[in-house]
Image 1: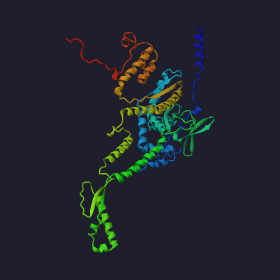
Image 2 (image 1 turned 135 degrees about the vertical axis):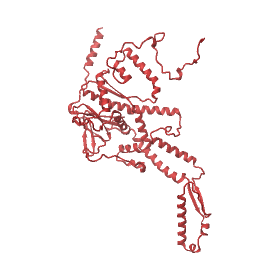
Image 3 (image 1 turned 45 degrees about the vertical axis):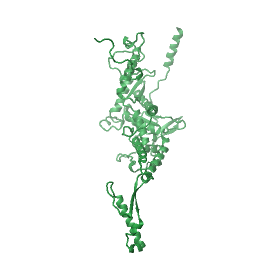
Image 4 (image 1 turned 135 degrees about the horizontal axis):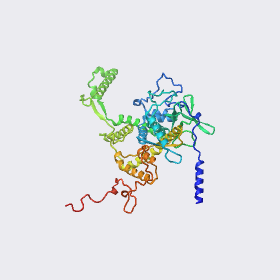
Length: 507
């Protein structure tokens, strides 16, 4: 008994000695936004000039010329707009990663729910999503005007694109004049540089020749697969630049070859002996007049042939022979099929859709397609969702601590699920049954169960159900008293083998 008392006493002493992270110093909390939007090219942007908008003029651009951009991030940004394959990869990953809903929970350092912090962080998220921000330091300056700051989902789209293209993302939590959270400002890491001072690296936002120090508590930076020999993040897709350039070079060559060798062209042969009989003796005896007559005939025939419509008839003398010039074959069905497949693939990629959605032919094994889809989902979850959850959790943790709440925030977008909502109802019922059972056994608090099921805290006056064993009833147990496990009844292995014919006499 004495041993147990000493154990609990030492455990309590150890827990009381845990250092609670202190609030940031007031000097590290800027009164106004420290960073500038990444589309600003200079720290002294003129208010009278319009902001530049890049237009690649893709209708007349050779994509291979984009490789001559000044930096690798610049090349990737341009190719993400111009390359059908790269743009489809980024677009599809973002659509899959960013679900329609998210959950934010404040927890004490021991892992229990902090209800006051949870209510505050959910209000903060709704403010970021729906209300205008005032970060100018002047009361009422943000009210009624244009809200230039993104919602949480919009910020997630921008940050997720940065993660995919450049391997990292950054964001600043903007404060109002009372130094309380007001809005979020995503920042491109392409303009973030680091210096090493006092045994740590310090970030700077570089705009032209000006350097804006971001050694502040409200600036957050996360990277994907950080290289320990580099201070900055590396792009996970930069290895695709060479294949994209090679593919576009092949497409340019294929387009020229198709026009020259695959598409049938009209060939006109002038039978010189027959043509000479139509000329006068004076023309035949004068080389200059003979050359002029030949040139005139060739230009006349070319003009007439080039101006023909498909339905027009072609009438000519027997001194001309007209035929189709082909690549040694009388049919081009194979060539057309190959070219159509390539072009349809590019259209499908550029339109950010699947071939079946566009009415195109889709081939391949269903097992291979399922495996590729699952691998893609895992890549999106570990490469985008977890990193977005990390940066939003850190930002919102600082937000509630500025209000004096000693807790941390767990923010998470909903996990990826490819099944339709109607099909998920059975699985939602199973999940609800499991959560209620944990609540009934006292393994989960009322607040946590409500957050898991509804995303909000319990309603005021709701009954406390944790540990009341309300879920263990006769209907939930078998004849031997064992708790039954709910089934979704969606598997063919669990279907009953007996027919639906009535049993027993009915009269």
